[in-house]
Length: 205
Length: 368
Image (tube, rainbow over all chains, first blue to last red; front, side):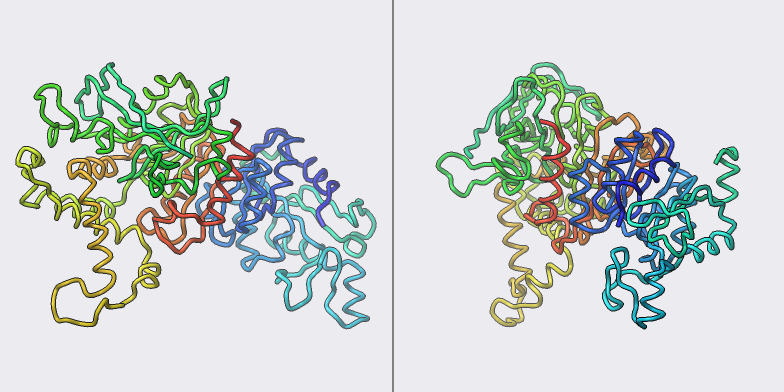
């Protein structure tokens, strides 16, 4: 579950007045929060009809586009930061989406439920069942999460593509988790970029 | 809600894009709701090809006289006339009350007919700005329109950026594709080759190019409906079996003939030619090497852009071109693609998500 603590962590990584694109922005509450706290100029991408209405209620610029195909129209490096919150695990073209985030944005922020959380491990290892929890509330047959991964997996993913991790925060129930994050953390937040973008932005990242 | 048609007379010459000048002209308009003390709650509605200033409500004593967007606009509706002062205006060159080919040419004391100048979307927007001046309104809360009306809303955003806070552009395009111009040309040819057309001076010959107009309307109708919708509404159904004749046998034939016939009784052929030409000419990016973003750069309004999935006359791709240009220029924009089966005509219909988007936008983002 995304909480205000997670919002605050994300906000702390975003410069005042930045241009932000939130992929799969849901009801737009993160963008609304970033608008209030950081004065960002934000756009959300969402494809769910009800979520779009909530975005409009929240005063958020929302674009109804299918994430898997619709980013092609967004110009290269036209955003400071592209956020993908709690959605990466549901994407079909995971690699392509992350690459596209760093094409349209200078930096990317990704948040995801940590499949390596100890309770998930125990449910599989001891219970022999796929884990169900507050952060992974679905049964195996109705989950939208088709690419489950752990904090360690994501770090390996970034390392293999030479992505530079700029910040990492891990939370458990809205409280920051510094100790053994891959075992004790339920939600991971990463800010990262690639070498080309880092050079373009003058290495200040 | 009872609607009252009004006329505004303008005696300041209006220079047109063609180089012609209208020395004096009238605009037919209607208003719904009440202009607030700050004069900040006006919403201007721009009409598409064959509509008029009669946007909402009914005329007194005529129960079936609903305005063309009555499902959208009225007390408690998506565009709530309890909150907003809504203005419907008939465009110049039309045949429903504003100065056009049916009006008297002061130079000849005969109807203009073919002598009425060609008008453009920009000319319409300029004349609408004159109407706002006439009503004492400096800035409108929103300009809203579908199809050709959406093009006018888009045009408002860059032509009068200081006078418009929101542009609501529905089922529109930043210009017509070659295919779209082709449809318009076939429609115009149908009219102009009708022997009763007389180069547009049919009034002097006491004729009407009804057959040409009817065919023009039939062509239009085909493009306003999606393939699926036409299939589910008419399919291959016959009215009364096969007769081995060219009388209307398929239901779709009889429907198109009926629509064409009805249209030819109330619409003016010279107006049809001019309105389709205004559509063809509209292309704000043309003077900037095709760069729409540069064309829209003066805009300061917030945008709501809406398209319909099955609209093939003004497809979602065309709306996304506008959204892309607005994004490139860092403009505030919301874009929704309504999953509706009806084709282009969906913008006139009461689709729940479509109306919810407009209602939510007006409730939460458009300050009266």
